Image (cartoon, rainbow, N blue to C red; front, side, top):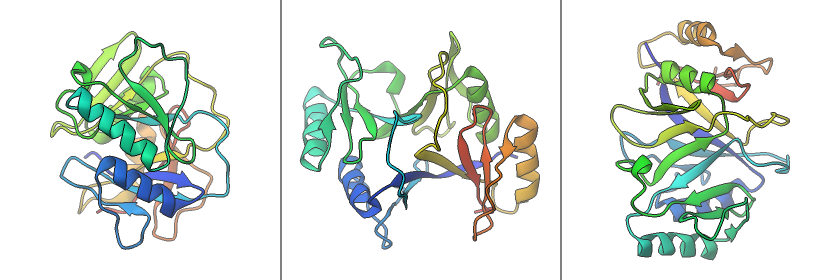
Length: 237
């Protein structure tokens, strides 16, 4: 038994505004609640913007790498993001780099990748959830989700569902010390008909820990992966 990726939780000081921004950039529909981006296919996941009063104080552990089919398409995606309230940021990229580094209206980093990137071939609009993390955590999530490793070299890892869609990648050492709750977090769930407690126990055997935070009102169980990144195990979907 393996869990399925259901949603990405995204902390926001203004969830409605950030949902509208990302709906426009990703071409997603916003649910009636105004803060959830609906999944557009079997290999996509919902994105749920959750209210927080905490200000962003450091680079995110995870960011989006968005794909482009052409240079014109890349330019159009960048222009759309700027029109909706995004901005250019400098993280040390050089003029020769083909990707464009941006931040959304609350400073969350993301990249618009140039066309022809082989690593992101045959992925979705979100080519990868590019993450700061160890090789160990890449192995953990491969087992947790049942997604095969599609990259494992020099302690850098990446996984992808056998059905395709976005990859999740981890850059290996040095891993930045964790000083605050991650603003982007995974929501996973055991498959229908399975037992939530059994799945939680399995994840613990793989290296996860139960969080000291109380379970959610919906019965969801907060946990952390081997790198200390928060995630939630929902009831079976």
